[in-house]
Image (cartoon, rainbow, N blue to C red; front, side, top):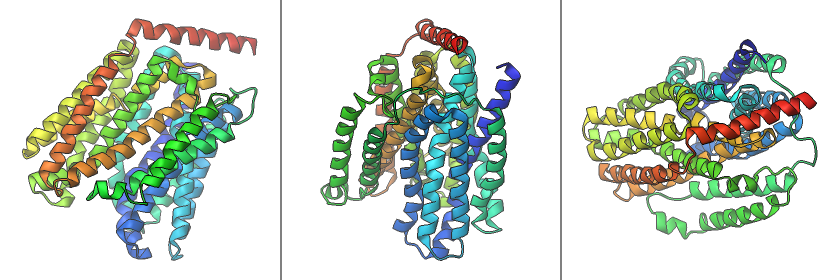
Length: 471
């Protein structure tokens, strides 16, 4: 595949990931209108997000592994088609008075969206040489920053036509992506023997689903009381049991969806720990507007704009981090990113009452997270895995990021609530995230230097070329 063909493949992947990212960014403006139409309370509204997140968690490893059996092209197209079908169901829920129909649409959306990013990353690993993967991954990672810049504007324009159009806009985009993906993406199968790991998939789905539900049920205003309640601890206990069962099942599975053997490779174990920490840091950003209201005394609608420095920094930092990966390697880029994010978190916790420092802190946090989320850890997994493990390894990046987000949301909410939602509580929460950043710095020191990192990638590429020649 020449550079021109790779660029066309990258463009298709970019638009598909952008479609999924835009849905996350523009669903917020639709919530008040949806709440009013269906007569929902705040608890019910949360399920519009929760149903999507739960389906996304299950869809990520499922779709990643299915792409080994049926080819990247077929599963990428399936993911986009499912996302479009879910969007259509949500559109039809308008005027039906049936909230369950809307939730069904969100579940189908989440299932499809869960596979779009990891399969796209695996395609990059399959089609791009090692020295160009960082730049390609960085470009895909920048999609999320772009989505959060364009999303609120697009959402504001479409909301005037009706909230359903915020979901209907996905349909024409999906049709274009499906047509181009079917023509341009590679379609070779990676898995050539053994059946699909349904037992492992079931155990993983239970482990993730019960963890998400249990953490989501925690009352941040009274954490310890809710943890001992029957609405939380049985779910968390069930998650622990499911994780134990999963590890036991995956040790003997022919094509595991959660390949435990990958954790024997230090580079991958470190990468997954880092992406979980990045997810925790990303989850804390949800509380930035609340901190702005408490510390700066601004109105809620003004506070939301104070997320823009973070988003802008991530938009610039993601492609920059990707390009630096190809030149400097993951260790330098990730260490720098963790250091900058940690400095931003500590600075925010100490100077949040100053608007200027609030903005500066946001820029630092955004730049730091851009070197953790997206390209860098995915770059590590591409270099450290064979084609047979590539999609599952990419799916694990999403899985651990989501786990970090779930834990981070619960922890930050609990710490902030301990001070009654005052600025001191949020400052303490961001200081805690800064302390986690210090731990992540020590973890990142375990990554290989550039010279050692390039060797397995080159060997893997030679192996792929040999396999292709024999084929």
